[in-house]
Image 1: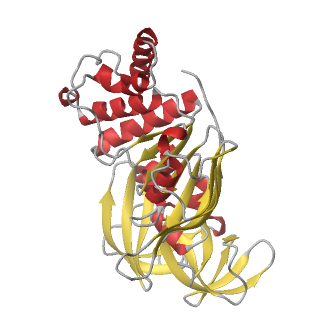
Image 2: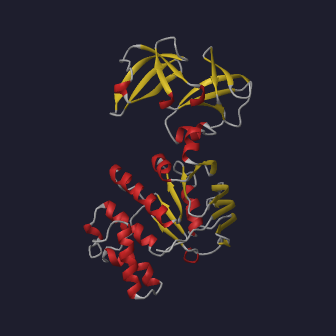
Image 3: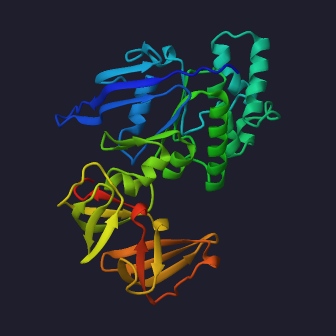
Length: 366
């Protein structure tokens, strides 16, 4: 299958929906600017109503922007209809034709393009093999599992060799195990083909495991763009930190900065922090963000925050310890609990952390 890698560019794209009842217009997407590099898989991540699906639909041509421009490669496609954009969209619903076989479902797009029958047969067989369905061409969609139907939908999108593959929450109808399997398959196929892809989801695990980069959205705005590791380890706001993973937030006063470390006050104790978001400064009342795996339990008085073990949850390769503190309940993740000290429920403990494992965020920036 031919590889076609192009970029996707959004320049100051806004989508405003008019309210026919005289109320204020709804701004679904507000001044979005970003570039998806050729062959890159970028995920639009955010809660319901954040504008991620509207953004995808504008790239596909199903919605037209109110303002701004959209480019696929060097071509301005802002006002082009979907069939002129060389994109393919894989929807959340399978959308398979029940009266057609798997083969005919996958071949449908090629038949519309008047591709010769011999070429159709070759390309359909190659694409079914690519998605692991080489022996399923004669079956009806109703005879397939949910995961297999989703693979057919993926094959139907890929067979037309689009410049850009658009995926709108394609795994939301699958159970947890199938979702995990299909995540791996989609990523493997996307990398093998070198195709540019845009993926929409509200599932942070999907976004982190699939993406080259993640675009986090809220209320129509892009809040942060970065590699999964950057978004997780170095969020710029409390919203991003909480949306992409579990986190504890502690109120601190920033007392000073020596160029390498921030000196803070947390509950009357002095703490040192190595990392901070760009919008914090000396004298600010900020929040200290800590991931559960970055915290450790020590004897009472030896850490930064004292508390009591309320509950332990054993997960096999890790243990989640819920600690009641003056700042509320804090989750501490203990990896490989068989090799670590586990404090029983009800005992007093202290929570500690290393300066380079936590991050300061602006307390007013949600």
